[in-house]
Length: 301
Image (cartoon, rainbow, N blue to C red; front, top):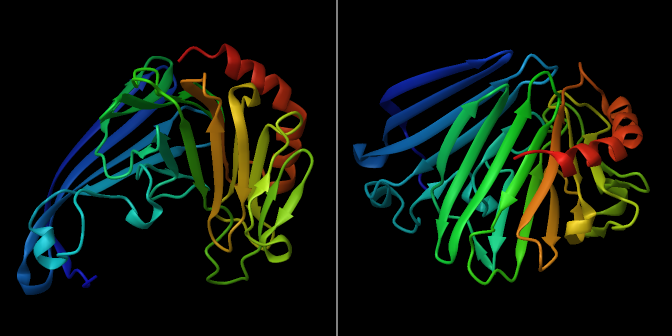
């Protein structure tokens, strides 16, 4: 890929929603970029920040290019280019501690949402709600993220209930906890109630979780943690299997739903170190996972 030169100009719009203690900042940009030969093309970006008066501020990022002029610079590229195309996922980014250029992947009946531009809706009614919708060949797929007022977590649902003849629903997650290895060595860990896997000693081979005893995972770096720790909790009664793959930089999680389950619910966290360091975040999940699972099962999406 040829190096792009600079951004020439942009159009910008911002929306700020308030409801009680929930505040959502939604910034939309259309950028005009210049590449080799002064060829110009447009890119779109959406940055959504949920501030709910709780201890964590969550930031969603969604960027894409769908301008044919881009192909004049990169003729082998496929449009649209959404987020980090090497991630091959939805392109929805999330921080803290998750991958900001695409943290969640969705596949229905073997068809990946990758390469499909999402419709984005946001609302606030005592909680921050961000909803992504894709019109797939077999039906509509949605990813819903809700952050209740004063909470530290996001309740999430991937809904494939409108997909015709749904046979499989698979999810992937990419976590980027800790730091980027600029100052210290990377030392990634994945911890559950039963295991502690370290990339340096255990490698990147997939580790299978026990569906009867492990329903949450915490990701962190033992050397330095300025990006924070990432956590996820799921309802194993709706899942066939969960695999965790520690990497030197990115940690990947693969989740397969049971064939009869058309909706998968989960809870995600980004733990800044000044809120909960890896040790206190581990204790928090280990001591409260049963209570939070009940909240998830009763949550109104």
